[in-house]
Length: 604
DNA sequence: GTTAGGG
DNA sequence: CCCTAAC
Image (cartoon, rainbow, N blue to C red):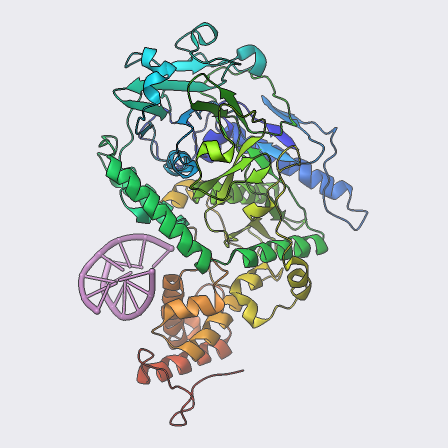
């Protein structure tokens, strides 16, 4: 299903990485503005309604997996839905925001960085991302532009998108580029730098500040992303951007490299995929409602309420055009987003489904994403290759350059639990691993089959082994695993920015935690994390430490004073025992807890 | 980057 | 869950 959304509806509502607008003080993920942005919500609501309807109508059959027929259509205001043969996509908005002019000599990595920079800074309302000019730039058509000139190249007829605010110059006639038009393109030149960036409502480029001066900022972690965002939010001067120096760029590259290297070891990619498959299988087995959502993530700057639907089966989300110079110009019209798997009980309300889907989207988009580059349907893995080497060059005839937004944590399966007031109607949404992304054309499928089947099979049981980690238990469709977590609709969005969503530990998780602490001790939370929560990306070792803290406290107080989901007394007893034990036997320099002096609390 | 502890 | 001092 492709939901075609136009204008500031979609992304605006989701606070997806988007073209900054001039309502600058608005905080991303703040409660959505109640105007057209709510359209996105309505869109999802409609989708939810349709899905539920489908689910109910097919209730006679056992299979409750909703299949949306290609012919399906529904409308909601200006929102339109279309379907594609292969994929159901949520096209969240039109894309008018990505404008790139890059030298073919630039690293793919640096280009990705720029994209990430763009999309990672949700709070940056007006951004211009600078790239060092190279010798080629002087020969580019940009030199004809004055400092304040901006190019906005659009093809309203072709795209059916009217974006007056973008069109400063007659795109067709004055385009310095050969070949076809570059929809949604906008450039400016300032000094020796080519400015790539967004245009705000005031038609001004505002330089972005605080472009992550530390490599740490590139850590593909939602936590980090949040911190960055938060810091930006609290910074009053973030709009005043220092010019990036060359050495800083190199630092970025370095940071990216080392961090990605770390990530590879820390987060096991294959395992995540296996879990993905597991989730897919499990959800399928349970006859859950599965929504496969690709997505076009983009936004129109136009205020025009009317949009023309673009072709749905667009296989490429980016257009590349050659120019006479060595620059490759392309506009990213859409981003695919990871699939969303939504599992809801039939008793769930539409409202809860709305929130759930929203949470899922927010999780992906707001939680920190990075950009993947696809060329000819294949993922470009070598970030150090130049665009030229990658085949992204003005000489190449690229018809399938694509970008994908990928979860920052390949292992992360943030399960968003939402619920209706009734406790038993939990809803879980899992973020699909990016490796399973499929594009609209169905030709950009990347699945790691490695060891997938075996793992999926071995984990298909309803009862999961302890070693599978607490995360898996969350996938378990038990009441406790799907403990309802009310999502505050009014403040939920701001909460997402301000702090992580509260995710009460399930009994399963507590059990895993207790078990781990019994064995490992209380001073090595990182090990505890790795031991039982490695796959639960939403549980940091700090979380585990905190949870243990509260567990100890809970165990000490009377049952009457306890709140929240009751923890079995047996577990609390073990908590106290373990706590007492490790209070004596400092976990720190503990290597010999197998000694016979004191039997460790190892159980099972 | 982790740990520990207060907020 | 956040923050951060301390390591």
